Image 1: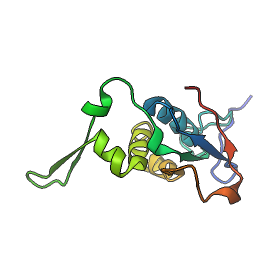
Image 2: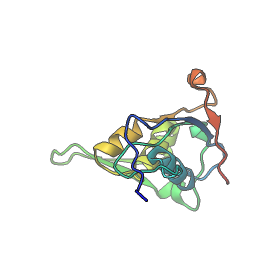
Image 3: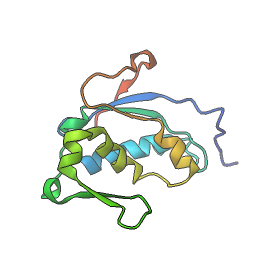
Length: 144
């Protein structure tokens, strides 16, 4: 019996819609990252992008537990002296809630060229509407 290895041209990709309303950020991100990587498929191959496309709606209604809303910080550095920028979770949720979800999912996928290809299949929207109706996405239910 031979081991099956998926080839990039043979993988058929599906589209899923995930409603983030009332969901916990980390739990949602781990499920979405697994779908983007393709770990839910029986033909999963670690070195091939065999994951599916994911659309996350209602990103502005995601929740975090404990005191994370007041204490969580996001850091970025310009690589120049004194170039550290610190943004709080609450400020980022007010301005760009899509970025909060994207950063949480990106932290859970590989940081190489395969991971960069996989994160491009993630679409995050602030409200309940999305422009991907032509792809006929399936609704994916995530337990709260």
